[in-house]
Length: 168
Image (tube, one colour):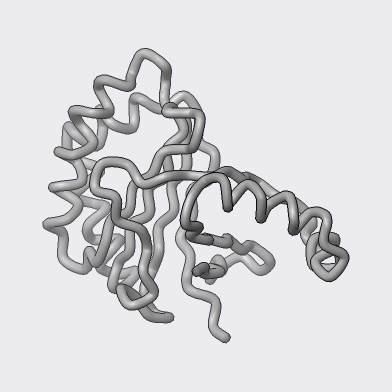
């Protein structure tokens, strides 16, 4: 089960999101793909891999589901690493922030995950009904104390972008 997303504004930027049954299967598949001769031309065509990691659902356990969005949905991907001394702050403020986000018009789904083997590496995926609604919501969200506190916990941004489901 997987999806490929593309950046609607920057040509050549893609993001693959694959859901595996467990971490062991995901790691084995990653090794198999690297060694597979059929996959070699595809892998060679990739100019740069910005980030590759395995994540598991965090607090709510919900993963992206194709039934939750269509080709017009804007998917906001945020991957980052938080400061080691900020884990407790994140555990408190992130649910508060996501409650605010979830109340915004156009918010369809929030998925949150943590990297396997690195509790400081977070991935948040926010699905918005439209770019306009997302923009309006972000104006509100960015003004909240919860957002400002959450953003201050990050040591580095790994990837941030707005993507759309790649059409067949």
